Image: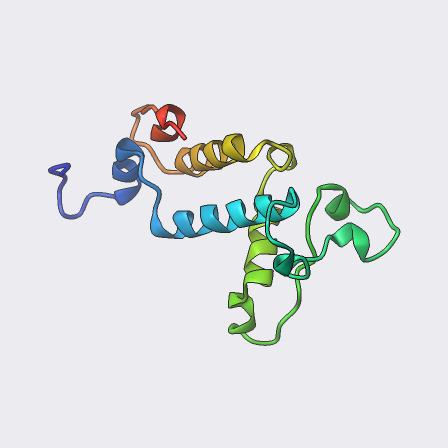
Amino acid sequence: MTFSNYDAQVSPIYKRLNFLKAQDIHKLELAKLMQKFHDGLLPSIYNGLFQRSSDLHNYNTRYASNQNYFIPSFHSNLGKKIISYKGAVVWREINAEYKNLPFHHFKKTMCNYWLSQYYILGFIFKSACQIAKT
């Protein structure tokens, strides 16, 4: 496909092909779920899944003002695999200015953001997310 050496670093290859790595696809899907929850686009059965940190108390903290959600604490690694934990953690990592974008812009912006984090060996490639049609 790319005729790369067997020991080549994969990040530049993913960047050149405009592919997200599996863990970034997972984060993108969680971010899309969180964006839909944040905008109230999910069915009502999901209403209790996440809790805004601003609803926990009346203090205006930086964490709450960045539209973050409460991250439940667990004493095991199994608990950290629950969607209410993972979704809140991924949402916390997202820049505050991206959180209020319309869904189709949010999706492209996050895809471009994670692609931009890949290591490039001096090459600049145009992201497939920029030219992708939704």
